[in-house]
Structures are given as structure tokens and as C-alpha cells.
Image (cartoon, rainbow, N blue to C red):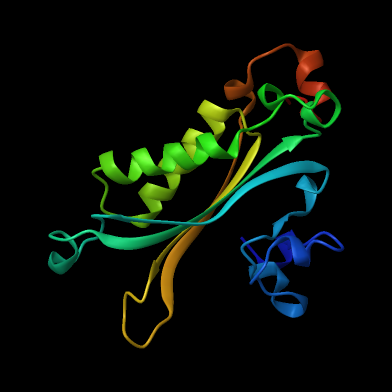
Length: 174
């Protein structure tokens, strides 16, 4: 993935407080893929919790803090017209899913943990695109944070539906 693969929509810098703009915009947690610019974005930013995760022996005894950002994309949410929560992704339910995952997972790597979150958002909440950032703050005394950011898209197989449904969402199987 290259820095140039991401853009921050015009005027979106304020929508993602604390994130870089200008030349650093491609690395901002709020950056989105250029081809997803027409998506509605639902996000949970700065979720904090404690869990046991890691590969170092010192990480496996006591829970440690994690910070998680999740951005989920839907092609023009029906909720924009209906004003009904059932027609979009309920960010409160994503939050609850994160809380449950923090308590129940048995993963070692942040990459695997982020993948589990992405699968939850795509499969359980019907997102078409998701970006997950998982951060270990102050893992090392001379570093603010370490972590991982992943992006996943819904595959045609995950979406189901007819060819007309796929076309309506801008995805035509090849």
C-alpha cells in the first residue's frame, strides 16, 4: 500500500480530530481510499480498552492498553433518506463488539486482532469497506505508540445478491 493510494476528502480534516493533514494526510487515521470517496463513513475513533495481547513474555501476564479506530464505509447509506438506524451501521454496536472482543480473543499479534475486527465489521455489520487501526500506546519508553493499520473490502462472495445489486453498488464481477 502506498501513501498515494489514500486521500482525505476536501474539508474532512476537521472530521478526524488529531489527525495529520497536508503532506501527512495519506498517513492520517481518517484517510480513505480514493475510490471510496463516495461512501458514507461511520467511525469509532479512539476506543480504549485493556487486553492481553503480544509475543513478549511480559505482555502475557497483565492486560495492557490498546487504542482502536474503526472506519466503515457504506455506499450512500439508505439512512440518509429514511432516518432509520436499521438502514446504517450502528456505531454503538461496533463499540460493544470491540468490548466483547477485547475480553474473549486469544490472539497474539495486532495484525490478527485487527483482522478479526475487520471481519466483524464486514460480516456482522454489512460494511463494504473497513479500515482498522490498533495501537499499543507507550509500548516502548522512547516511542509514543506502535501498531498496525489494515484495510479490507467486502468481496462479491460476501455480499451475495444479484448482478443488479452488485452493479448498484458499483461492483460488477469480472
